[in-house]
Length: 470
Image (cartoon, rainbow, N blue to C red; front, side, top):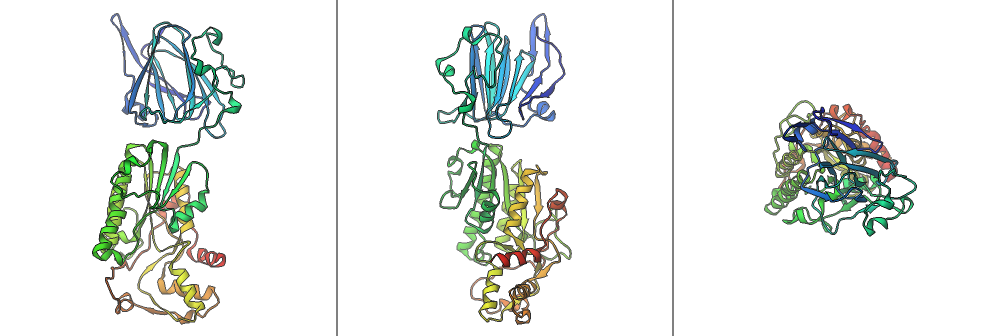
């Protein structure tokens, strides 16, 4: 008999993420009523807000009808409309819980949340049984499944009605044993801008596991009008956007202005919509140029943006769009140094070439090495840090660009006195073409990123390591 008027609550199982829910069912002489799916109440009690898009109903004439074991590429909310079902779930996901098993009888007063990649099977225990399931992706003939044999000896499911007496399709009888099952990989992580300094650092940090995808503009143009149709986005869990238009001075020209706004603002808005629509975590790399640099203290995450150049304005617009994704991290950084053309490489070349450079000394900040940004992004994702903006730069005392240049000279065995400090105005006095305004204060406060357990490397220590590695 169905238990009426239970309290809404969940019970965990040996399979991570698979939860069994008691549902309140209200009955009287007329029949019964239940809220089979109520997002606000369920998410308040810990159910993932998994965003169902399709509702399916399976009606079964006879007791003993058995379907499965199928692992689909979507999450499911399974419940009974009439009758009773024996459910069996086997974790077929890649990882340490592969092969874990849970079984449960489901009546009107129970529902089960089945995460993507968990094999599920159902055996009806009464005639005229109907069960229903919500899924968070539309069925597609191109969807990739994993399967397990219902009679597999390894998982040894104790079916209430023996499989020899059950009604089973020929296809379900022929599924492979556990030892031959191809584990379901996790949803993919997409790194956009893989050819840039931060993108290359992310590849070095994460490696080339099969759930990681690295793309440059030639492989995925995020400014494309049909971006939403260029991937099956439900296959992705995380998008890391390390792509940007970064020519600060070029952005002041008509052509550069269009390019900056397209890459730094409009494309980010499109990614944010995709992330919101497909339950994807969006990580977006931002810049100190969203500030005017006039504060006399380090900039905090909550300080109002006040960009003074086109590049900074386009980045600020991108930040505003990224913040609309329900699951987002905006990683705000400055003075990035990585694998590729950069200030440190230029100073190293000048030092060894006998050139005595004039370098700006009225802009102050901290170097940020791309591998530190990659480590910080990975840390935020792995510890499930609260969503929002995080400043990520090197640690230590702020320096001017001239101070950094002198450090490069000294660390490479050259006389730092060869570097002459000049003002920004003086440095650009003979420039041909547009010159963007620069923040004089690019120092970012690191309190928030440190509060979630990440320790940025001291900028000068990182500089020494960078020069040692060459």
